[in-house]
Length: 123
Image: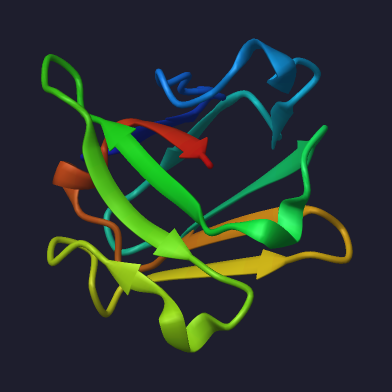
């Protein structure tokens, strides 16, 4: 049986646009351990933000398959009609952003072997 090794870890990307005054910002993955799924199953991930105004911006999910570069999955807004997804997951992915709990969720259904990756949540 071909299983998918899907790991969910936190990645906080710091760009040259983020000043040193942004200390205390963080994203916490829940849970932060590896998840094993079979093809056809559904993966659900969540992440909590803190230290910044969560409602101000969209949140992005990205992944990194073993031995490959980063791949953007999609962008989630409070207004889900604004969400956008990569063609590789369109129709299978759903991102939900809840400002009241500072949580963002990713649901990826009908998993394929090529979905196997380390998955990150970024602002």
